[in-house]
Image (cartoon, rainbow, N blue to C red; front, side):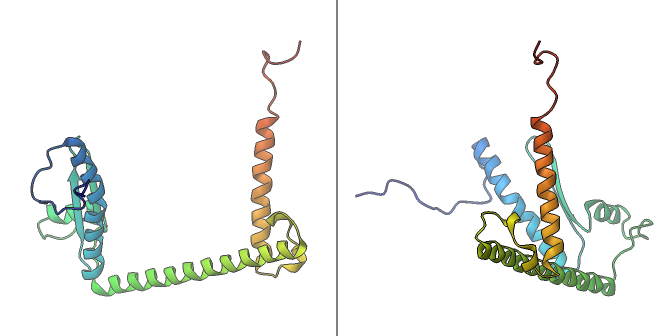
Length: 179
């Protein structure tokens, strides 16, 4: 029995895609990869990068590290002194920024893990009490770390309920009022 589809085939990436719709789809799918490669170059080698792409409709889509404007200003200056506020990063400054980034990522991961543990503890407290919703958790069973998060969630729930009640009980307009 012969194959019904052509399957996945290799295409010539240097040839213009004739179908306009297919060309737009391919452009939309490949653009993020192009920008990711530019970001990777910037991060790995500590270089400033700028990529500007114009779509068929004439829309400019840009990526820059540290920013497109900073890179273009340096290009415009032809190697002369950078403009005020555009001081070039030295390697020490770049290394310090990378350290700060790693520290921030580590803190974010730790907070995410802590919040997950709080959620598990609240779910266990609800399950132990045989209640239906997380908001019915026994506050006495929660620890010092969980109570502020539980209070914040309860306040958020209260505000959402108030907003819904306000919408439902909005005064009737003169046309809807009983005569």
